[in-house]
Amino acid sequence: MSSKLLILLFVSSFLAMACDDEDKTTTSTGGSTAGTTAGSTAGTPAGSTAGTPAGSTGGTPAGSTGGTPAGSTGGTPAGSTAGTPAGSEGGTPAGSTAGTPAGNPDPAALCQDACNALGDCAVSVCDGYEEDDKQRIIDGCNTTCQGAPGLAALFNQQATCEDKVAFASGANPDFAAACAGEPQSPCSVACSAVADCAVEACTGYAPEDKAAIAASCEALCTPELAAQWEPLSCADKVATFSAASVPFATQCTQAQIACNVCTVYGAAVPAVSGLIVDAAAASPDFGADFAYLASRGPDAISAFKTSLANFVSDAFGCTTGAYTGPDMVAVHTGMGITSEEYDQFVGLIANVMTQAGVSNEYLSTCFAPALTATPFKSQFVAQAFPTCNVNVCTTYGAAVPTVVSGIVDAAAMDPAFAADFAGLVAREQMMPGAVAGFKTSLTNFITDAFGCTMGAYTGPDMVTVHTDMGITRPEYHDFIVRLSVGVLAANGVPEQDILGCFAPALLGDALVNSIVEK
Image (cartoon, helix red, strand yellow):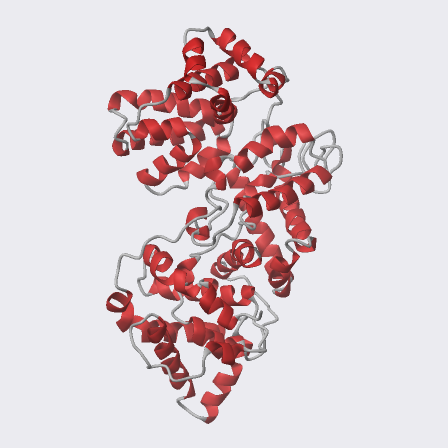
């Protein structure tokens, strides 16, 4: 778990910080990571984690904190009174009016834009939808989105119509089946109707609960029951299912809490993001993963917290465009993060929120749905590397010397690795050609590693070279992800090839274990 969460939690943030020209410090292993790690990872498609999102947290959607009120008690955000966010008056975050956080887009407009796009894309991409279906798709999308506008922000991050349809399909199996032109089962049809009726008739259910209601219904449904439910009125459908499911009946009659996440907690997002990072760093489960971030110094920690806060704010629809990092799917592809690891970090976030004063009711009703929604969670869990569709040697072999030279030059000037390259730079002063020789050796290592040459590299093996150097997984991945991705992209390597052709080898256990301290 450590290596996976490491990439997820930290390396991504450093890439974003590098792009922002943040001043960074680190306790690099003197002289060891330098030429040696460079030699082992050069040409590494840093894009294998391709700009890991500065705001991501161990596979845990930073948005899960939803601006939890740092340092607050009794559900009241720090620095506020009676539920008023710090720096605001009357429950209105500072800089906003009428309860709308500064820079916050209208949730209804956000949902409408997303749903219009889904309607267009579904008709364009799906075999099972025609132009006549568009308004029905838009109406159904709006019904779900109004209860969870943060999903619209995530949907809008999907670049292509195919991506948007895939996102919607993950959120709604019925949409996915209809998109593919597959007939729905009797229970699927009946339980979809039960879910619609529950949202309409039950005080304890909101539109975003439909998928969960339908799933619990289908677990109990039989074709015979589906036939019995079909002609019933909405009230009778709800009453019949309530008799079959005590949990459903109990939730149905509960009062629905109004979720005004941005209004109530928006101003506290930065503070609570810091609390999450601090809690994770102090946790026995995640502390080791945060050690490298701590070694980068206060500025790096502060920058990470800021990026996380921006991601949270955007994820819950409180702002638009505050987070400028790459999308979550590209970032987490190939990391193999399990559902259990994801849920474990979500549990840490829930504990932070509870300690900060968020009630269990608000936590379960307003924050948990966003955290556990399939479209959101699936961005982090078990993303596989895409297929490599090019011949690496034919396509990129001639460019290896240029890429290697760029990586070495960048590392020698980078605050995290400059000390490691100081010896090489000093040798160049005494022995002109030392840097060029190192670059040639590194080039040969890469071409051999990817099967473009055989026997070109004549240096020692990686295990021998890196033994006792104390190189950590965070240092290794920082070198690959943050340092190399810009060089590869600048030389024209597209993300698809970085993720599919280079990342599997460079982030694979065989190479990682030959370099990283056991």
